[in-house]
Image (cartoon, rainbow, N blue to C red; front, side, top):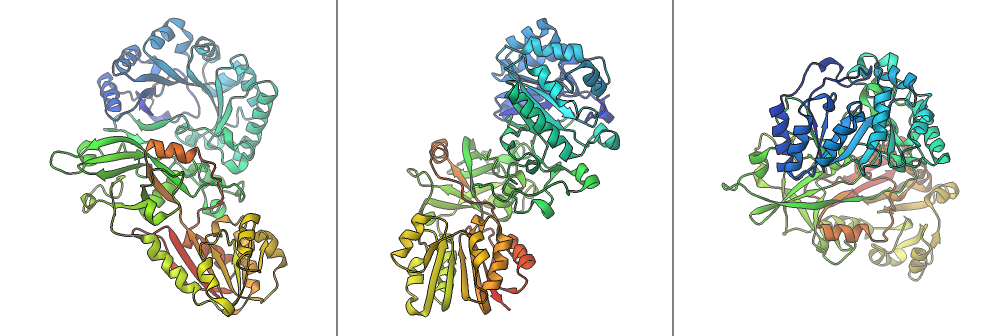
Length: 596
């Protein structure tokens, strides 16, 4: 993992969109940067990357690179590249383990690039690409898109073509610093940016330039190009530190927003960057359209990183060493005897906001104790719930801290919460439809109802239906969408949606059909699992991620999400029972609705 250190904000370019336009006179003392390099090593980072401003104009550059190498870490730069057009300097840095370069080029010609950076810089910047290419570096050229170059992106692709080892990234300009002060002058509409980036990627592919990515563009505007998404996390940055800050902070996406009006229920919400908040404030979200049909996971892995000793007094290791470097959602510390195991979740199927909610709001964290399975299939046996340690009680850092956790060995929340579902099924009478009946989790209790019910079920899985037909005659292969188009009005007393809600591609259309299908006082029982995190060893993670299990969920709704859909699309259904997930519960949530 990489640590990003800002060494100061002075620069030999004058980009109109510069993030640090108002603090260009601020530079860190050499000793401050030196100490931060040592702190990065202490935190376990494998690489230190210097940024600014422009780090290559600092006279201490080679000394800092030397210090990084002495600490057995690799060295990297975020740079405008001008000083790296000098081969002698590049050779010195390569000898000191320069392994990563993220270089800015904003146009394929001097006319466009120099307009963007407000300097005669193209010759040096483009020349640096030639000097650095072929040196075995992890090397990305980044092009920031404003109104001034949005129509000239093919030229950047053409300029990169001679260098097949160089990746090219197109990034939406951020409304920060100059991007905020000159917003009207610089900010293009994001839909136009997406259109031109898609065109540039297609152009690159047509001329043999394959390594083109994009950043800060909502994925719904990049359909078919989602796998080209790129950001600090895909570059393996974990923490960063600004000039004057006392310690590192996690890299996050909190400067962006996924507006719930359009993004709630989008199956691409996990990896999607959303919109910059400043952009959304001015332009809103009308350019966005959710992606409803992209399968995603309903769990993610916290992978073991290291064992951490508790302080001699038995207190909190985080408060003893520093709370801020550890990501509130993506890091997990689990007590194990007198030590703590440190885990990290790098999943891109879940956003920072989602992971934080799963961990702290929903409390859905589990230790995987099944050592020989690709995935847990008996949650009560295979998983141990994790809860916040008593050491966190009363701590002033509790709200912002990643926290300490301990496994609970005395409770099986899955059996306890599942019992209520079975209790409700034991009272079924009349005409019952089981939606997405699957492979029979509740078929024993349904079969026990005998002549009290007239049972039918559907599922898109033909094998599941064939197995069910051995017990029940009224089973058929169908999708929720097909059923919704043919449902008979007022024909059912019960509709069961048992762990299949998040498998529905279009839940709004489906619940409207349920409302039509139910007789007065008919009931809909909706049950599903919230997303959860699993603390695993590296071996468990490798086995699970190498398995053939397919993603089957389109969302990771909880009861509140489903209730909002029902209220909007089926106002004739009245909520009579609701069970939310939370700290101390299992993953199971429940909604019971009655037709007015």
